[in-house]
Image (cartoon, rainbow, N blue to C red; front, side):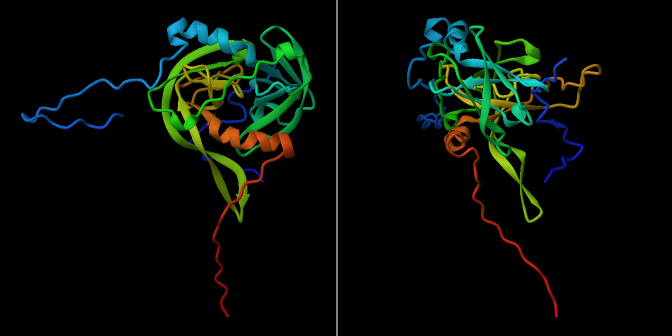
Length: 276
């Protein structure tokens, strides 16, 4: 069943980042004079990357695990999930593809097989046969502890420019996206979506969104825009991008690897008004 999005919300999902070849601390107690006093929050731990070269160190640490994905109809991004050759990307990147080429940062390329996909969360798993030295699984973070204003980094393959790194912040949390899942004439929504202003462009889809510890906290998926390139028809970045939260991905991917699909439980109420 196909969903139809309202025209007023122009949301580039499947095409966003697939480029067609040719998408607090609590308030402190007041003093006797009723003048509030404040102290800077202390970090829980020292960030090893920031202590060791900041963004350059982050990039060098994670880039071996970021891949570019090409199909007959377009291109996107992805990342290495484990040493068994499982690569994570968006479902819309590989949708309908009979051939999936995975290109590693080292220059090594291999054909992959789609072994599982979930169109509702827009997550897919591609299995590649690659040498052990090419498989560099990325560290997986915890998207539940993200905060608005936190610095994040996106790395991917925008416009075919593999290994491109962009910087931004978490602009919002708990956003929702329309889902293709439907029941009794109604459509569900995919929740727990991260909003970011890190530049995401056609070809970034499926690539990782990192925190400053080099941990994957989301999969870059789409942008919202009302501007499009007059020549290519590609969406123009507006600073409003969306990523599937990694905690949602952590629930889905093991099931996709095992079963090839993910079934969503749901509870609903329906009624009828038959009259005699």
